[in-house]
Image (cartoon, rainbow, N blue to C red; front, side, top):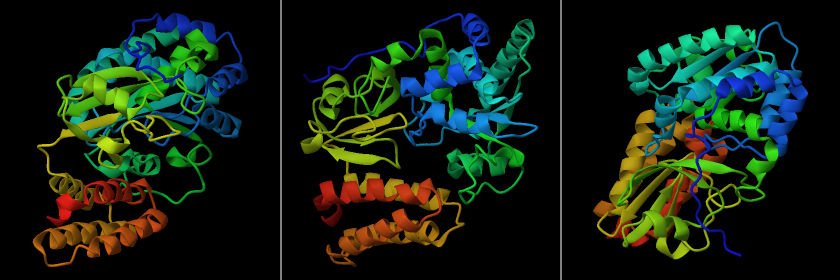
Length: 385
């Protein structure tokens, strides 16, 4: 039976977060981590790594200090759901960080906040101040601070984020070692997305069973989506995972949707003919939250051109595949559009993008082929003519 689109209210619903923490502290760290593992929760920032395993790896490391980092560097074009969560329910995020800290044995946590979100700092600091007072009542040793970024897209990648926090240039590190063993200041660190931490808290309240009842086998639970573009209903929506893109477009489209960019600029552009068979989830097309809808009035060449200009600007330049590749892809499609290069040149550019996926050091360069290949394959005529 086809899954119907279903709206959920786990993220923004009001709860007694202190009660959840108090009850959680009466359980062992292993029990809590096992619940998160059993729930099937995967990171909501886009990569989808199992959250419980990340916590388990960090917990098993021996160290005199460990850290929890909330990744609030929401730099993906088309994504604005973390900003809303931090505005509406910051206490849930803070409680999720404290829960993670208890589970892995960390006493310090940081919110790495996107530089463009610095206007949130006064309200977040007030929420943190109040939260610290509540933690004293619970006798939990955990301190949270805010670290502001400087607007670099690449710092959304967890190791570049930590380099930035350490006062260095925001460039990705080689892996391994992974952050759970050698992260911030060389200590075991759990880096989790804003939304992921709230879901972990809710699993602490509800247990894993209720969370597993939502979504699919590969994509448990719900997800907060940032809906924008050619839609009569833009905004933030929490929806159960596992719906098809066709169902999504029926709910949010304007009746003339020809493409949906799933996952922001670094995601996949799905054409109308693929809506029915495309599942929004880890078994189909995963997304960090951004859903941009385009109707027939939009030029897909212009959209791809904008994406490539963005990637060229935001590439940290550390590795040649990404640094040079972004430049050449942009120059290439402009040359084809102007007739300087023949249409067949697009195939050479696709080979270049495939090389970028294999050889780039981090997710920025590795993800550029997603929008490039999907737009070239689905809307080739709009690039050529």
